[in-house]
Length: 378
Image (cartoon, rainbow, N blue to C red; front, top):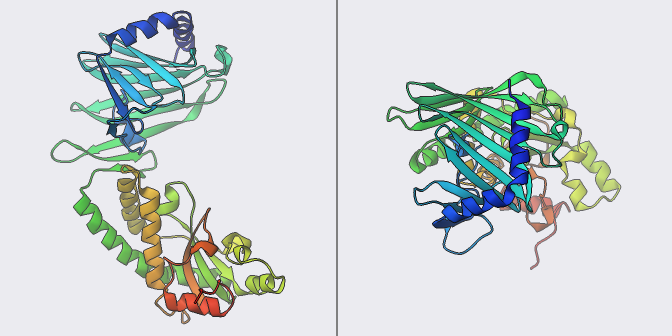
């Protein structure tokens, strides 16, 4: 059980001795690295476990930077986790302790405990609002090894502000390839958080996934037919919400002709006419092919580590929509003559060409002719 009084004492000491820890850490710095984003963390595989992109080292000065001592140990961190946050780190034989301040006030401490040269536990204790133990919260990680390799991270879930241990524990699993390099990180539900594949492998996987997704849209069409039960469908929106699982497991939201006709009769604007959320949500469907979902998740996590999951994921789905829009779906679903698939997202803007990358020009012209899109200037 975590001794929260122990960590509160460390925070009180950090508050009372701020100038001392600041001066000691800064005096040891012999090299500074300016970076684009967070680049270092002293806990094992932090970026892979949190599917975060590693920041780049830059030549110009930035608001995020690190100070290292003559032995290459991290001593000072600026804004790597918290705006205006400055961390000062000390080392002992079996412990690393970082005291994080904001505007000179203690924000949190992070203690990493070592055994036989390996981290076996880390505790982050946060007193952000004040130094009242009842308002503080913490994250506790335990590191489990097999044959010198980290294979599991156990993170008990604590609630704010009582710090009572909940009934669930969060597990993260790590797998390695034949060379001993980290290959995959999985969460407690066996969902992929990180995958170590080459660009060549990722490109091949993308091509494979695109073909399979295009074929899978036939099943989406049939599932939609079973949901709408004979109602005419004017579109199927592939809705990508802004969380990472929205890319590898999107919502397929059908638009009903009946709703659209009512919108036109009421002279609704073009934004409303193309808002998938204006149509009943109880007809939504999703991907059911688990093997394909895993491939898509693997690809998305590859992009995530490079900071491009949203751009690349949206582009893939737009290409899939473009492909299936070249097919006739009337045999499997009751559709309008101007029926299309299109990729939808929170900031989708039909007036600024939101459909262009999802829909072939000949179908866009049909929509223009029907008054559902702005006509091109001649």
